[in-house]
Structure formats: structure tokens, C-alpha cells
Length: 122
Image (cartoon, rainbow, N blue to C red; front, side, top):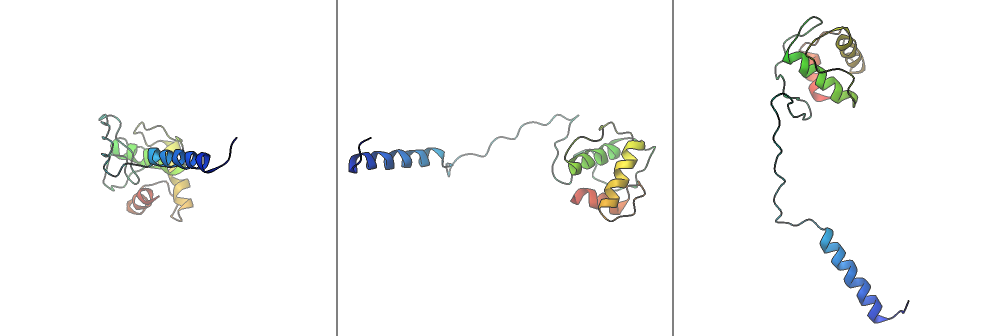
């Protein structure tokens, strides 16, 4: 490969072109938000979109509050350990107690105000 001012200039020109091609445009528009179906709320840190209250929730309860707990536990664990079925059964209770224990809360498996706060902060 020949060395000299001409090949060095070609390399510099190619490198500059590559940098410009990969640099984000300052005036580029933000990506459009994708629509979220009502049945599957979009997960964001601290909120899954099913429920935003903090009513005490325990084994035997059903509904959107339980779905929120299940979703937040899955988000915290980094994988889907609970079905988002809205049924607070023994598996959900066990995972809530485990979460509470790890967070330094009383591991009673009941989601009250302190556990809601910890779930949304985790």
C-alpha cells in the first residue's frame, strides 16, 4: 500500500465522512411514540399503568392493583416470575414477602403503603 500525503489525506477524508455519517443530527426529530394497547399498559420505572393507588392488597385480592404489584415485582426481578393475571395467590404472596425481606421491610406478604413505595422505587 503506498504511503504518502495522498493516501493519508484519503484516509482522513474517509474517517471524517464516517464520523459525520454516524453523528446524530442536531435537528433530528424525536422518534414517534408507539401506541400502547389498553390491555397492556406501557411499563415505566415505578409504574406499570394498571393502578396508581396504594390500598393495602393481600392474598385473595384480585384486579388491577394486583396486576400492578405483579408487574412491578417482575420489573424488579428482571424477569417474568409472576403471571400478570390480577390474582393475588400464594406465588404472588411469596414474591412480595421475598421483595419485602430484601428491601428491609417486614416480610408479611401484604402490600401496604411502605411496600407500594418500595415497589415503585425499586
